[in-house]
Structures are given as C-alpha cells and as structure tokens.
Length: 485
Ligand code: AMP
Picture 1 (spheres, rainbow, N blue to C red):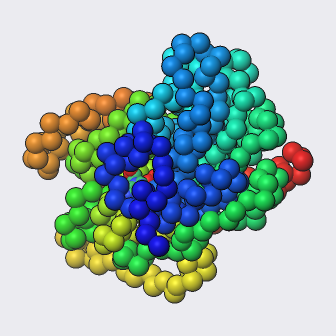
Picture 2: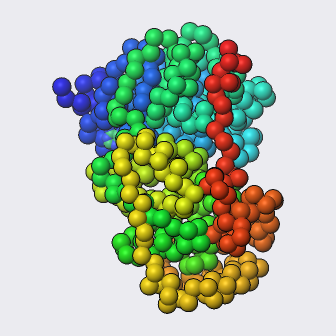
Picture 3: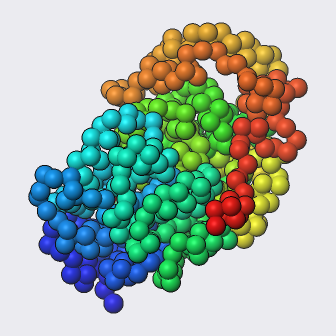
C-alpha cells in the first residue's frame, strides 16, 4: 500500500494546499486516521505533536465540511462546525496556523481564541462567523459566557493533547464545553499516552471510537543520546555551559519544573552572556510568541521552559535538551527529550540529577524500561582553578549587584562574550520587560526560596523530597470525573 495523498481523493483545493506544503507522502498517523475521519467515525489517536497529527484531523474534517462552503457575508451562514481544543496558547496558535494553510484555497473560515490576548478582536472575528474554531478551554468558556461563541451546530470536536489538558486540570472546563455541543457529532481525541484517565474521558465522550496508535507510548527515540549527570544545584549551570562548550552545541531547550525557576534560570544565563529566552505561563502572549520565533530563527541560543509552555511545540531538530530539573512526572521526560533527535537526526538529552532526585530517576527508568546510569560530570579541574568557595561568594556578591541593574549587566557581557552579530528582533531589552527582570527577586515564602537553590545559600538548598514547592501536584482527575458524571 502506498501512502500518497492522491489515494485520498481530497477535494482539489485541499489537494492543492497539501501539494504546496511540499508533503510527499502521508505520515503514519495521517495514513491511518484520515480514511477513518472521512467516514465520520470517532477516533482515539495516540500520537504526539510532530507526527503530522494536525493534518491527520484537519484535512478530513475540512473535506467533510466543504459542503457548507459559501461566500455569504451573513454570520448566520458561517456557524462553528468544528471545534479544536488544545491545552496551551502556543499549541492553539500553531494548530490554527496550520489549519489556515490547509484551508487557504477554500472559503472555510477559521479563527483561534486563547487567553492572554484582548477579547475584542477575537469577539469581532467570532461575530463575523467561523466554521472552524481553535481554542484553549478557559478563553472559549469566556466567549461562550459572553455569547460570542455559539456551539450548537458543531459537528466535529477535536480534543488535542488531551492528556495534557487533564494534567493541567482542564477536565471541568472540557466537561462544560462538551455540554454545549450537540450529542450527535464526531469526536476525535488525540493524546500522547492512553492513561486510565484518558480512557475514562474517551469512555464518557466518544462513541465506538477507532483506536489508532502510531508509536508505542512512552517510547524514546533511539537517535537521542541520553545522559544523566549528578550535579548539586549550585553546579548545574556550570555543567550546562560545559556540555554546550564540549559538544559545540549552538541551541538547546532547558526544562525546569516551575515558572519561577524558569524566569530565574533564564535571567541567570542571560547574565552569563548566553542569549536566552524564557517560555512559561506567566509570560504575556506576545512575549511567548516572540521568544519562539526568535528561537526558530536561531536568534536565541537557549529556550528555558516549563513543560506546559513547551509541550508539543513544532520546533524540530533542537540539538540538545537539558533537564535542569528532573521532571516531576516521568512522562514529561519522554515529551521533553522528544524535542531532540526528531526525524532521524541525532540529539543529546542531558538530565541533571541532584541527590534528592533519585526517586524521580527511578520513575523514568520504570517508564522507559531502560537502566539509567547517573554519571559524574568532570567539573573538578575547573573547580580548583576557580578557587571554589571564595569565587562563589564573590559571584553571589556580583549577582546581587547585577540584580540591581540587570539590563546593563546583560549588555556588557553580551558584548564581551557573544561577539556574533545577531541583528535580532529579540533584544535583551525585551527579555528585561518581564517583571522578574525589572525588580530584585523577593521570595513569597521560604519554601519557594528554597526551590531556587542554584542561587541560594547551602543552608536553603532543595527540599528533601526534591520536589519544588512551586510545582502544583497533578490534579486528581479521577475524582473530577466522578463529580462530573
Ligand atoms: P504536527 O504533528 O501536526 O504538529 O506536524 C508537525 C510538522 O510536520 C508540521 O510542520 C507539518 O507541516 C509537518 N507535516 C505534516 N504532515 C506532513 C507530511 N505528510 N509530510 C511532511 N511534513 C508534514
């Protein structure tokens, strides 16, 4: 069997858009899911972002909606017929952009709504009428409540990255949104893994779904070199820099477990002359999109991010991923390192393990069914040269001074250590617009202070559990199901 798009008999405008995208053949999820979605059946698909899953659901969905295509200016002729729900703003934006490309030769209208942006332009777009609405749950509910979005003619709903939506605690929002939709509809659910919670969600909202699985869940690509280095919190940044230097790596993702940790690490790395951007939930939408664009254009070396902000982003072939914090959920490890070594390219995944993290490493071992070796990274030489204790004390004094005037500190070090001409639209001044960069850090409480341990004194290093106080524990979704049923 060949997996050419021409086998699908897609309508000419869709076939033309696909050809223009330069796709030569269908990816496995497309080859399996498109024919099923074309028949109108419910689908439960295990596929991660990067597998071509957006086209797998949007092409057949557009094909089936083409019968409604019209050029009328009346909003009534353009009701929402398909709803695509995603957990994060970046993902919603990314999927909406792709749908626009696939629909570009049709008259089908699509729009995206997510939080962190002014409601007004979104409202105007919704009021004009759109057939395909891409949304994050919270903002969609705002629009439903404001009567900007009416969903009683929805025929297709896509729950994309469903496992993530449950992790974030979106189940009650999803339940509310789904209650506004007609019972008679096609529901497509995509998730990286089929956890018991996902199966329950599917059991509640899908009818006789066809299950499609394209990659074994929790599989890590064999092209990724996985390294685990034991590192005290104070040493982690130095290990990151040493690995980057040793391997000649130009760009990397650095994952941390909390928003606070994300902002602080980005700031520290910036101060050390690395061109860095932070991606976390407290950043404005504009800042997040700019950071992503800058990283894609190689204007930023290091993207420090939290799991929620980075999940599923369509950034391929990142040479390296660092787990500055061992992820709290072992599944996040698989998602994080999936950013590198994609599509056959080799990649490096480095996890920095402090002594209290061993239980989390054991969880990863169990999940990926691989014995992991935690090695020592040789920083010793460097240590003795730097005359460790005095140097550290000096560094902290410098840090405090720098915090009072961060922008000048960034500029000076960048000139000294980063002579590359970037002509970047993503200047350090923009990084400093983050309120974190404009005022000295004040820990809201002692536990949070302890979590930022690479800058803390030895007395206040990480808690014994190794779990930052800033990490919200996973919501008990099973309990929510009970109340929602
Ligand atoms: P997705 O998993 O939907 O986020 O897609 C990941 C990337 O793969 C996007 O940049 C798509 O444009 C690209 N893509 C999707 N389908 C194909 C295909 N059949 N051939 C080549 N690239 C594709």
